[in-house]
Image (cartoon, rainbow, N blue to C red; front, side, top):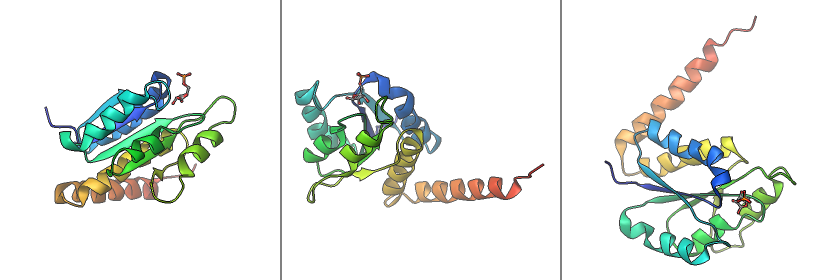
Length: 161
Ligand code: RP5
């Protein structure tokens, strides 16, 4: 078992359908991750404990997904200097606009890199985590370049009937 380099957090199990795309995308690049349900408001102490201990356990990037008044990524960022990537969940009432604004509008000083609402954001957060890790890992850098080349080749082969 490889040691996890990415910690994936979500405020509720109901976020897993979207957040599993982070884990699945990382797996495609051979990057190990761990996933936890931890809520900024329902389990504040455990959330702080997990984030505070993450770097010491070898975690290099945190991805946090939450919906509604989505403060999980911001709270996580308050407890670590690791990069925190936020994924806003689509919410029933406001379609994720609430989650997006809650995650992205961090006051200056504690950054959260915020991605698109829902699955595209989850996939891109994973790709961004790979890009961060690739800075010190040439093999990951090559995998990212290959991924982009495959993606481009697929587009260029598209035929419209
Ligand atoms: C947030 O509230 C979670 O991240 C989730 O997106 C949302 C709804 O949670 P549940 O009521 O489904 O547990 O904390």
